[in-house]
Amino acid sequence: MDDGSERNQGHVRRLWGLRMSNPMRIRAQENQGIVDVKILIRHDMESGLRKGEDGVLVPAWYIHTLKVETQGAEVFNAQFGPAVSRDPFVNFRYQGAKGDKLFVTWMDTKNDSRRDEVIVS
Amino acid sequence: MDHQRREVMRFATVFGLMASIGLIAPAQAEEWSRAAFAEKSLDEVFRVIGVNGADTSSALTFTAPEIAENGAVVPVMVSSSLRAEQIAILVEKNPNPLAAQFFFTARTEPFVAARIKMAETSRVYALVKAEGKWMMAVKEIKVTLGGCGG
Image 1: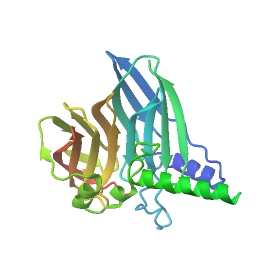
Image 2 (image 1 turned 60 degrees about the horizontal axis):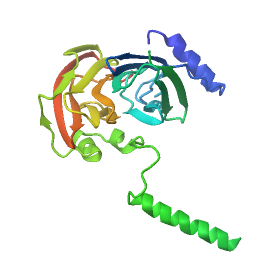
Image 3 (image 1 turned 180 degrees about the horizontal axis):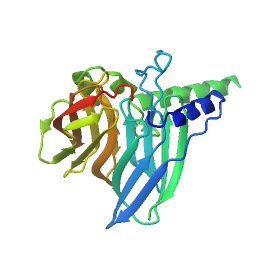
């Protein structure tokens, strides 16, 4: 609600069929063999229960899967329902090292997806 | 040509059968469980994700605010002193209780933090599957402003 303008921008872009998702903000830092990974995704996460300004329910549209892979193996797999907050934030930790290349992928209920990568520092 | 097609179909059938009885692991370990997220009661979610009894445990730490001023953004954190295979977060009074679930590998630390929406004041369940057994922690979170609209 606080930045409704952004929400509308996304809406307009999607109307035009330019499925441009924003890059994720990912921070991955190693400390004593444990990599702390913080992921922030820009996504409306429409639950399907919210009414728009016209009083009509906004259809459900949310990220359902978020996975993180490194060296060809999955280290984290999250499944979301509509009750994950807008602009999802997730924090997890795995046993890894500086220099690991992480591939982070999300998929949503409109089969939109996005993959970003980050090197562990 | 016809013969080739029959061969292909035969292989397809065999592979299909093997996949259905679990001889071939699916390419992705965990596909999104649409059914689990669609269930409308705690018991139904427990059944779908395979929880048959979960005890409260001191091995589990569940951190969440007692009062959430904004139900649209409720930070939750779950960790365990035992290696976790799976963690699930359920909000009893949401239209669909299962908010999120997380699958871990042997390399993943038993810890996760996320933000969820709560429609109203409710008990929130954190479930952790470790060594094949489920344990849980429950917290009542008061919601001042419902987050159904999110």
